[in-house]
Length: 282
Image: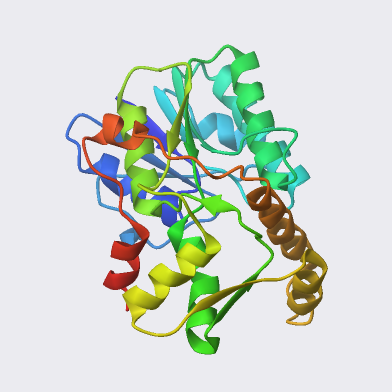
């Protein structure tokens, strides 16, 4: 089986490449937007340089590919959607037999979160293409959220505009394992929610952080306008300020309050809990 993985230079895509490369029955194509050092991937991995914005390069990379693992592009939402449209078109043109696509638990065009809208539209593009597909709808990553927790560790306060929103934070490695499992299986034609083992509000996340890191951390719910003003003052790029603030708007709407056992069904493993992840990185 020949499997191509997009975003192979990133943390998630790179982990999927390595998981698949461990299998004797899989030939892996690591798709990257730039050429990387030869030692970046295991020796048996083929590297294809193909920018999302270059359809001919995408088609060349997908030639004779049985399954594509679509790891999301990044940047502004309109750009990401264009990249995904190009990739889906190339997969259809090259008659790829299965697309295992990363999506999100909150994949909904009605969501305030910009990337949730992109994820839902990408799912619709794939379904309309006629390519057999499977979707891993991931919750928010522990590793992504750790940036705010690390700041809170230093200040003692987790100041975020999440109200009483609950989130089932998931380890990025668990998302990688789920996508790898989907890639080597038959297309399921549906989505699979990849979540952590528990859903907790931000006060609960602060309490878990305080216990795991043995330092006082308390959650302070701040108004969205205050969050935007304080974050803008740090010099964060306006696009990412918008992305983060729209994400917290979706958290306030309880769009990430979901716990499912899809990960265990796909991998035979239990998902990593936030407390375990933080304790491992004290």
